[in-house]
Image (cartoon, rainbow, N blue to C red; front, side, top):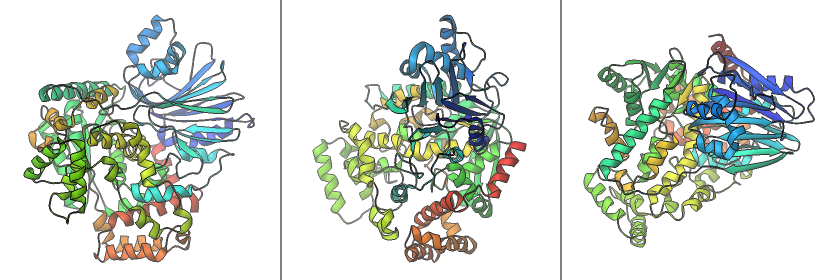
Length: 634
């Protein structure tokens, strides 16, 4: 696990100090060593966190004659078998690392065939000096980040945007169109980031840069096609694929632990991995402490569990640091516990396994059609789902017009076209609400419908509305929020976080599961829970989904935090973005408990904290620099 950064620019003659300054910005991703490759055309920089081949895996790695160089962030879990084939084909290896397998694999197979063969999480860059071409690839699901900036003769690409700030030709500008969608989605929802001109290489894509022309190509996508397996065979297939994935993800030359919450996903992974160390986090509020349940499960499995409490003061004092590491504002409250959880784990292990991806692949979110605890309503909804599409849509439109009653939302979302109501798992401000608090110049952006339609168009042939929603979250919520915070906040603490559910072999199984086995009258994610039941106490496999519960409401009703937020909202520069009276009213009403707009307040506050770090403070604040120095010295 590492940090990578590179640029192509013939006009910069002395590239070494530039690439070194850029590498310094991502030391947290690789505190063990660094390396660079520089020629007249490009500079490649690398920061290493040693996981595999501790002595010999330093990068960049060059081929036998020094004409092809690679830098790589991630892990390839089937690299040993590919290595054997490459040795048989005549390639000479200098290391025992998975990085060199990618290098020689590119030479032997080309990018398209190489990407079909590998299994893992990755973002890598290859410079081919023979062709004068740069290649870069991002993994199937977007577990590992990759950003790029292309302006004139300058091309920059790497793991984190903050490294771009040290390039002399990078123009730091706020992308004004990013703010309005963020207020709805809680994360940076556009292809272009909050930094003008900086884009993501999409998940499942690779790029080629030749003669300053950038080409981006898709090489993989999720395709849901229901199979004819029985329920029992489906559960067996899930358990087999997840078990094999966990075995693959345990490969390491350093100790591997796991994150453990009270939910089924991390519990299932932990039960299969059986690590020496598990880690849990909670808050100084009994309602928001998962450590008790995690400790109970660890004891039953005979595992060690380390847990800790995060105080309100610790959370809020570190919030600017958290937003700094994320590169872009992300108001998902779970960012806070995840940062402290990986910081806790860093004391004992370097690699941790986690449960991200299970909800998207196995339909775990309530918005997919599981809003009620009433078994009778669930059974009724199951029957409605089986009706012809036209009949279902007619029923949905009738339900939408009815006065509210218990179960109405569940029934509506079980029958309506996904495109009519589902924009992804997160929803904070509706567009009209966002317009009311934003200044006019920030109201112009892609509409929410435009943003999600790009994904819905690719699955318009699907008859299954749940599969459409899963597809949207796999390409929107998961890579731009869930996986982004998992990568950035683990690497902030120099930790490698692995996600066994997001394996292409597990995805093959998930893609074939009929919705009736996933969401039904029994539960959401039902078939996965039944697979987990083979390894867990039943009460764990059937637990209600909590995510990472965070006491934002309690914080906002607490006077010290309320005053902190109000002081931020009252700053003169805030008027550039928001109607100040409007956002203060939302805050005050929440504080007085006249309304519950905690998510709205938190989302505005998050943006302002992030903007202050990157645009007001300008230089890295001293507490962030001190934090990075402390980690490196440790």
